View 1 (tube, helix red, strand yellow):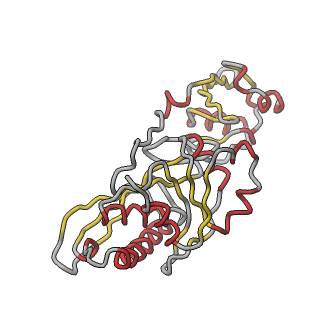
View 2 (cartoon, helix red, strand yellow):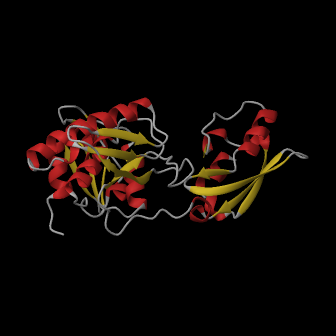
View 3 (cartoon, one colour):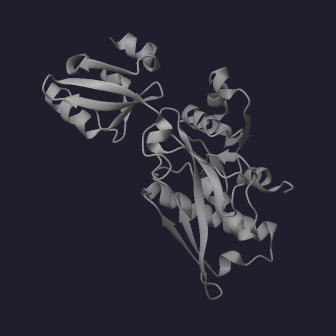
Length: 281
């Protein structure tokens, strides 16, 4: 049974299995709860979870309480979660990050292969001189919030080096919007979006990145490189920035995942700045 599902899920527009025969390792789903161990718990689990993904194919779940079976009906993923759309030219204050799979507001599901998404930085208001603030909005965890604070400090220092006369960070109240996030790997993306807003210059077109940033501007290793790379491919992004520490992991990916991508490995934010902003519009 497992082999039939794993080998060619898209062949069957719909198929039905008894609860006891469903391979529990085959699914990733909306709420990411562990699959239950008993039929009654499993039945409730499927009723609570509307869509599952098998090898990237989405299936609508219909549960029959009478005979305790589960019907899988193939669906068009884009029609369910909305087609992921990226701007032709990244707007000022925006930068593209990469996530393992779940991004609220971009696609409401855990999807095998990851996603690309925007960090959006906006100027709320100009304040008195030497009065500035950073406000992070969105469903973010403490690690992401701390990463945003570090990115803000690095952005201030980089701006002072690159444009000494630019006083944007001295008197600005800034909002950074993040989709659902609980890790630190968006640090370099947040820093880039802040600098884009401060300099009023868009980030290079179709550039995505992922990397944790330290107060000294070092770019640290991140996880889920395969998923994030597949997310970039799904969004037709050809240029990616990863930490140098992830080079070996990326090199070990299948050729069909890496093919056609222009990937840059960095260990300092200065390198990201050059890639993101030193271009001719």
